[in-house]
Length: 345
Image (cartoon, rainbow, N blue to C red):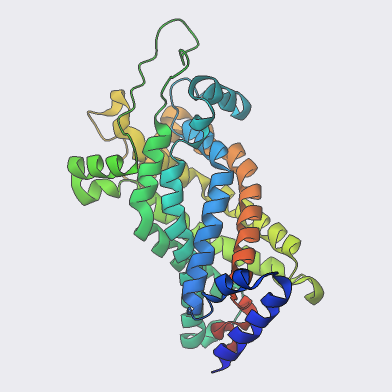
């Protein structure tokens, strides 16, 4: 009864800011949806907007991480110029379709399950209190859940982004032609081909380092974000700029600590696309991958593309938070402080 009253009040408030009854009717369609469904929609939309905005930098990062021929010795700017020259603007968004297909359910599940895990921990383990430790545990659990549900789409995104098709000239610096043949035509083709080659296990190739990386990353992200917010004066708690700043710092710290695991994951995902490695599986597991990269490629390779990640994470977090807040306002999602789990705590 309270939620219906709140929903009608919010509808009235929105009506005051929106001109035209048709716009109001469109917004009101969502009034009857449960809060967790609205969180799924808001999180998925925010993830899609943010991912598409930084797609060119994401493509360059993958090319640097996987040491793609013609790119491994280039910097960010030169890599962007080379992609534009040989593949055109569309080259910046190669693999973005698979990325958006993955990030929509991933972000939706990540936000929604975080709230559910957080409420479950608060209700069942009150001894932990309501501080950032709860956010660390809930964030880690929600990150792992989202990864397991969407990993094959991440694998497809990486394989598509790894392929470099020379449509405007020779990719190689010299006169010798570079034989780079794309094997996949799209996300569906990748998933079908990979499943045919190795079954369900092949679709989860590299999930080990992904989980090892996402558990601390997702946990740290929520931990740092909530811890920073605790030190912000009450009158600035609802500020979008404050959320953007705290989220950016949290993302930067989390990425720095867990980035080497992301490099291992990318190389495991594309190792069968590299002709010199088709006979043997290079990495037996995550730790073998870490030691092999340091031994054969140097420790710097563990951080290849990290500068690109820093460049993309700030606008990504900014756009993601802005889109999420906008969607929550349109869908009448109450602030997190008023959610059931926090109120119960």
